[in-house]
Length: 627
Image (cartoon, rainbow, N blue to C red; front, side):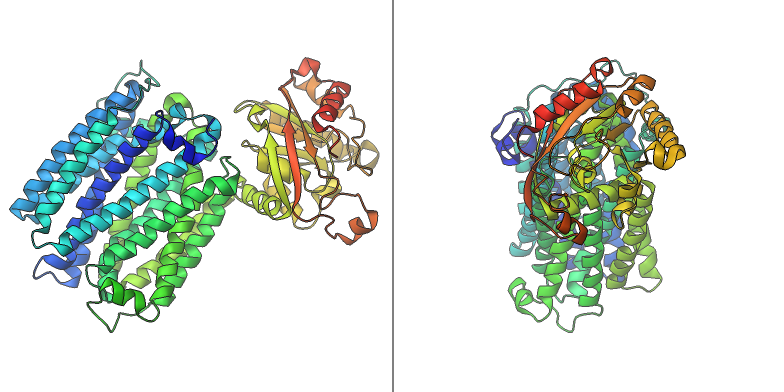
């Protein structure tokens, strides 16, 4: 496995693909931004309403093919060897860029919009291949880092392509000729690079192709059924593109009317947004400890709303200045706040989008992943078309651009609450990630031994009140922990435990009915293919030593023989919220803030070998002397 995400860039299994997709994103944005600058600043006689119309029409035309042809593209990607497909798609890009050069020479806006539609078609074909190859090229522990690099590289390419397209149009009298030459050369370079991508076998070579795009669209969307987390992750990704498309489509006119900038400033504004997404994407791996950490998604949603709201309040009315150059814009009063808001929207957008893509790739059925990515692209396209139509309707209703941004921010709150309430795992993982990240410095070993699917029982030693949070935050799959009912009811933590669907239990002498309900719920969870977590000691340690494992684990396995994952927490006894010092325990004061702790996971054990005494011995060995 790669030492870190950047070491992937030195490996042939990843670098050619990374450069191929980045060159494609760069080329798309050279052309798109050159066209946007042409509409906003170069076409004589267009009013502000005309510019809004053509800008949103361009945005809608580019993503319309995603809605129409993604289903067919998903089938194509599943059935065929993927490196060959990428080369064919790059040859198509060369032809389309030749048409773009013809459109600029003809100086025909309708023709260029037709070329933009074809570019959308080429991107539609590439999308299912782009995201479905990553699980085939990368190991599970590299998936988040690889996605982060792809997203960061994509938005860096968007940034550079945006700058190049704007600069070529603004700095040269014959800007369209320079743009034409650039897009053709970059398309050729992308094709040459694609020839170095290693062979990537078809994931479903026997798939029967349905050539009817309409019925296949319905079938492709049906691939999202059956996996709740993946479905709502796709909805989250689609909402992000709705949110982002609303901002990006308005930036050229927003720059001119509300920031007072000329054609030099629009690329600068897009630069800040793209740079923020790139930085946020790369930070994901560090913040998540190289795991697919969906706890970052609620953090991203919160940041998107906060900075989008502040962007409205930073510049709610039109600028009194006009024609500002990039340098004049940078030094004008109040613009630093605008730039921070744009950078913040991008930064938290990276926190939001990268874990969602990694979640889709890690939890989707590998034989259907390309079709699931295609379904994602269909919904993305639908959301972006709706975003363009909504923006045009709002402008006709009399709203200005900052007011559209404000509405977008408020809608983001509603969508986030809706998704996170339907899939509480997002909120639970965020709270777990936040609490554990603040209180501890956690290392993990062997967490990949928890099976990716099917039922399993996790057993661990019990040292502190937050043991369950640490384990839940370290393991990719959701874990339903069985816990003593009084710990389950601790203020603040009980809200998290309820979201995590923890199972409260009591000894028979305290509440026999609750105990029986707990065992019934444990069996039902395992029958449904879930992972259940258990502290077989039955109570927190009072001396730092591992107590005897009780027979409840044997009762569970007798009723439902599932594999068992033993694990041990090390270093927790000297950390916060243990009972090492009874006086401090009563005062709820920290004993060792930001303590170094470790979670060590043992080999999967068959149910037949998982007696209470055997599990106790394994957990003792895993923990060693580091109480």
